[in-house]
Length: 263
Image 1 (cartoon, rainbow, N blue to C red):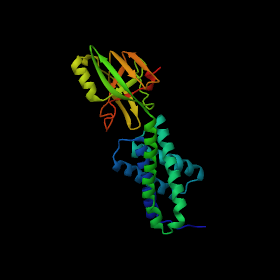
Image 2 (cartoon, helix red, strand yellow):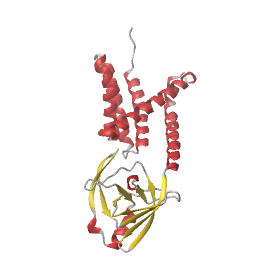
Image 3 (cartoon, rainbow, N blue to C red):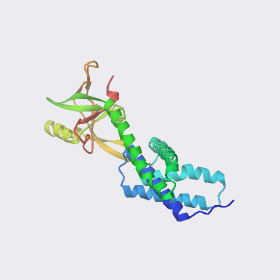
Image 4 (cartoon, helix red, strand yellow):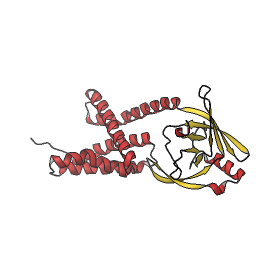
């Protein structure tokens, strides 16, 4: 049995779906890449898919290339996710998004018999998935704990609000101590007023969008004031990292507390 395949239509369909899936992964992982790079990854994935389908390769070669190789290239090129745990996480999210989007498209297929309407439905379905993700993220953020923190630098003390974030696993590679991250404006005020600039050094860090270095310093003392039933904790000479940008867009908190500092 033979099938007639229009390669240009096949490419366009795959480009659209691959780009939407990469956009979904970008939104979930908050990758700092431009949309044109995401579309480049989608185009590359669509082109490789057409190549694999067109070439007379055995199934033992086509299946791993199609289901693992092409998607890996899309993530590396489109989102700059390189290796390790971040890559595995992005890979799982990509397949989860593909499963959800494919299931919804299959469910609405009887009501969208025209091919153009069927694939045009992929765009609102993408926004529906993004809306569901934002809702779940909002619910999760409501469960994350905020607290009051007092930082002591010399004879001065500074009061800030902090978010206890289980996603912050940053540690000092020299001492092995957990690193909490503070807003750059607060750090500048503390360091300039107390003359602690000589204590600044740099440590490496890794995110889903790549590697970098962060300025860190030691405060004299940090007092963490949790909710009434949890009490207060004092940490001597904690390691504080300086964020590159504003920590909270709404300025609800000025610090991200590493949960490992708590007993």
